[in-house]
Image 1 (tube, rainbow, N blue to C red):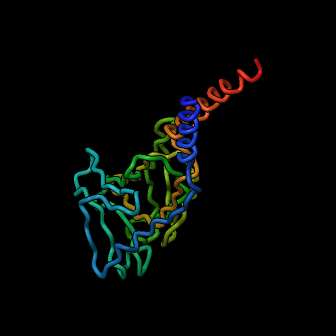
Image 2: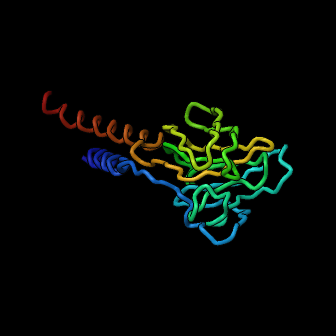
Length: 208
């Protein structure tokens, strides 16, 4: 009987570990909206997501995030805020504080001056299958354009500016929950497996 109680407790723990319904969040950076430009040398946090400035060896500028003033002509989100890296060649690294995975559904992007320049952005992301790389190319029109991505199981991504080419981002749409982490799956499988063994032991004497 003690083994049965232990098994049921394990099963209960596994059920508690079941993931919550998926939640979609749009990170707008509008909490950074100011009447003047601001430079941030520390990561920017939105919920449990961190946006960190990264400096590559070929980048000779300052390693910092920058936010345009709300009414700056270069702001692709007039009256709101976008996020950019201050130096050409710098990057913005995005990940969850707890290191968990998420779905990157889309993001909005424009050239640094919102002038309709074509920018080539080195886009890299990591998931359970390893590291990946692709290019994002902005169009000739001013204003934000939406890049549909739909990448599941992402643990981090980076947007890297090419030398002489810079960008600003806004409306990063992410989805969390709904898909258990590997450790959660392991707990669930173990819990239900132990429950099955205990129940077989309990039923076996009755059939003997």
